Image 1 (cartoon, rainbow, N blue to C red):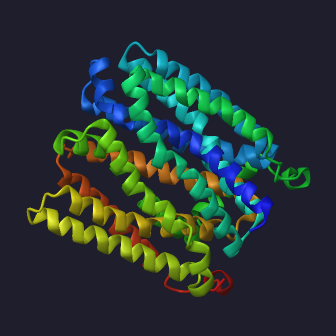
Image 2: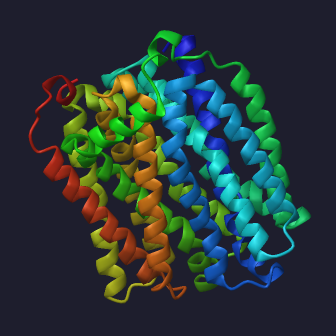
Length: 399
């Protein structure tokens, strides 16, 4: 692996991680935020939902803007918004202002979540893009692996508000990281980009069955992870009586297989093709979750069993989500920013709907959470089987 290749992955991964850092780091504080702001569990969970709504909606603008003005300028704008949102959360006197701060944070986080995918497509395609995306995911894994544990220490030392002062500092560091990134979209490529052309591009993408099918594979997979994000603090801390720090360690343990497995995507895809990889990995994801659901529905309520099977499931998901994104972007290099925006909007939009819907069934027990994740896994497998059953694009299938 060349030094420039490694450098690209590290920079893009760190920029991508700033937004999720604001999600994962405050997860152990959800119960204490509710007590501090005199809000119930549903209202506190809403802080995740509004963040995802802002991220999903905002991406519709960031992608086209990055096609029009280059990749770096919208990233700078996003970081500024993220800083203002973090400051509002840190100083919020009530739940309403806290939710507003989270919404602004989400609008700022959009850029770092959507534009790095477009940069990957600017620089590479096929298996090479899969390798760079996997490397990006490895660096990105800093957030779910370390953020909850870091958050638990910060919460213990300074209270939950300290978390938002820390993510504000992370955004400031992000400005420095961004200055080292070279612009990947030349002026000539921006000439035909406009908001009107973005509208037509969105219409074309929505009518592209292959694009929508591959996006829905990753979307259902990510929805399952969002459902775990919103429910696991209550299940682990209140049902299994774990401390915030123990929960953080367990969350990292569940997240690790996703990012470790993603590092093998390039090697496996070289042997069996991108489409075969997605089909098989999504099937493993669904089978793992169906087994877990069957055990808990039968009365097995054991934390070790749940953690073990979730690790298996998310390892399969780590091979499914990045690769399905590469397949979706493969034929849309000229509008990679716009296409990446639509991917992110669909992922976070559906994730928000799933979290809001699951809140009506959540009771603090693990079974409703497991059932929701299983449904997402089965849908993920179904879309993979339907969309990728024919290798209409041989170069991609066997790359």
